[in-house]
Image (cartoon, rainbow, N blue to C red; front, side, top):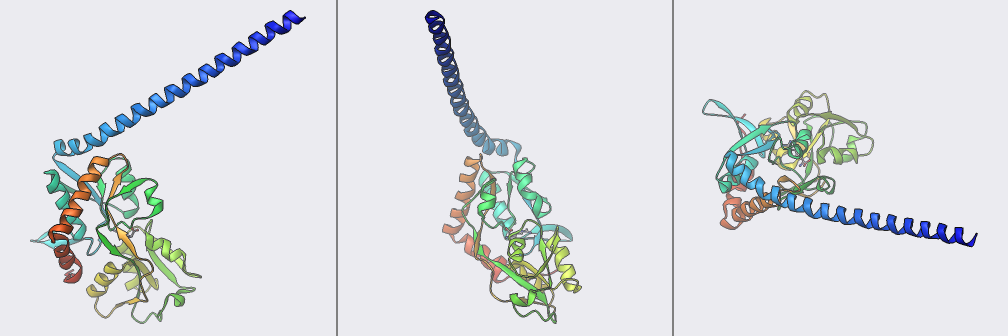
Length: 282
Ligand code: ARG
C-alpha cells in the first residue's frame, strides 16, 4: 500500500512538473512571439513611410462637408476639395515627396478607412478624444476649437436651454453628436453629412445643428440673414491628424510637418487664410 502511494505521488509530482514546464514553455513562446510581433510592427511602421514613398502618393481620408476645414469649391471651372486640412495634407505629402490623393467619404467612415488601410491617414477636423485614442493615434494638435449650436433666424432658440423638446441635427460619430446627447430633453436627428444637416436646418425641419464653431461661422456667412450662432462653445478641444497606432514613423513625419509649419509662421498664415479672412464663395 505504501508503495502504491509512493508511486502515485511520484506520478502526480512528475505530472505537476511536466505541466509546470509546459506552462513555462508556453509563456516563453508567448513572450518570444510578442518580441517578434513588436519587431514586425516596428518594421511595418518603418515600411509605411517607405511604402508611401514607393507608391508615390499619400492617401488622405476626409469628409468634405466642413468649411473651412475641407469643402468642395469650383476652382477654374473644376470641382475641387480645398481648405485648411487640405493645405496641411499637402504639406505632409510634400515632406514625403509624394502626390496627394484625397478620398472624400462620410465622416463616420474615416477611422475605419484608416484602420483597414483604405487611406493612409485621416484629416477632417478631428477632435482629439479619449474614445478615439483607443483605436487610433493622434498627431500633435494643429488647431483649437469647440462645438457650437447654430439655429435658423426666427427659430425662437436663444440658448441651449431652449432646445428642450426641439430637434438637433448632428453628423454621425462626431463630438457634436456627443454634445447634443448632453442637452436635456432635446431630440437628435443623425445625418451622414453636415451638408444634409444644414439643408434640414435651412428648411426649418430641425431647430439646431451642432458643429465646430468655425464651420458654423462659415455656414452662417454663406447664408446671410438666415442662420445664427447660439451661446458659447460647448467644448474646447484640439484638432489633430488621425493615424494607425503602428505607424509611429509616419506619426513622426506628420508631427514634424505640424511643428515646422508653426515655427516658420506658415501655420499662422494658413489660419489667417482659412479662418480669419475666410469668405465662403459657394
Ligand atoms: N470636430 C468634430 C469631431 O471630431 C467634427 C468633425 C467633423 N468633420 C468633418 N469633416 N465633417 O467629431
